[in-house]
Figure 1 (cartoon, rainbow, N blue to C red):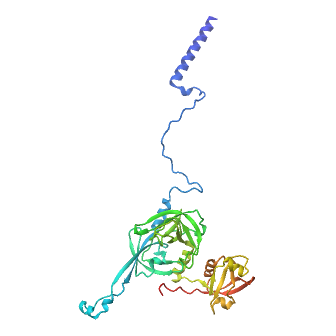
Figure 2: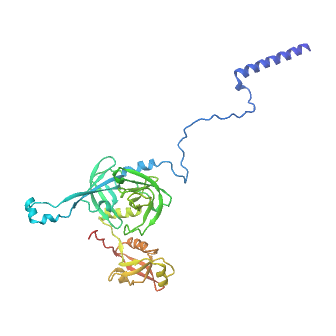
Figure 3: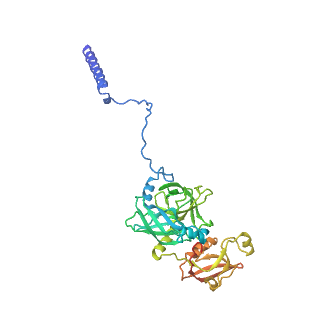
Length: 388
């Protein structure tokens, strides 16, 4: 019995000694017991770049800017302006004293704008009013080069013009889709405001399809609050991916500076105009020879119309396409080639899009009755230059 007790006590002693050694030098060998939570230590750690979240505003548009800015140029124009001749020059005594060869006073007037490289072959898209009546046009590229440009063609009715410089391999911008724009989409305006240098401003699409502003004959503007100032005209309006969605054209301002209301011509319109100018040197539009006016509620009641939609035919050109087809003043045009006419601006755009030489079916309302006529589409006369 004593021997067994001695063996047991020795075993316990050895076990305790082994446990002591292991717990001291190799505690990880022991089975884990219930862990007690520790208070976390506050640390400052640089966060990784956040992943874009669908529907969230991006934290930076630098990729879009780097993609688009090489294609946006500065445009400098100049023209000779002759000052009114001094009446004293007609006085014989004055001319005798100062000599007979007294030239008329003349000086150079210069202006500033922006443009967008649309082709690596040297085509540049800008506003017509930027290069109107210019004797000399110089395009300054972002890489520092300055090149003389020539006007390929212009379209005053959309305030667009196409230039060409003698250069190859230029960084052409990527075209986006203005039809896919929605109010609230982020847009960037790129240009050279006030001659300070290439500048990028950001904002959102504030409105679409703006018309009736009296800026152009054909209006379908993108409205944005991205700052557009003098010198931005003809520059690029791009989406958050750096794709061209519009050409900056005008601002609403009482002071001459940005007030958060700017207008850009949609790239869909700009591309149609540009393609025709590059191909033929001008823009051809459909025309039927009528004068239209908006239908007010009073006119709608007077003509017994169901609503104020459509365009009232106020006048018909004698011998014109509409006259030959039987259109009469007082008719209301409600449909062009199956597309509804909302107002005179809508009618103007729909008719202008028709190819001259073809026949178009148009639906009218005459004294409360529907009438469908086939009208031969003519070629829209070119607008007279300003000042003539």
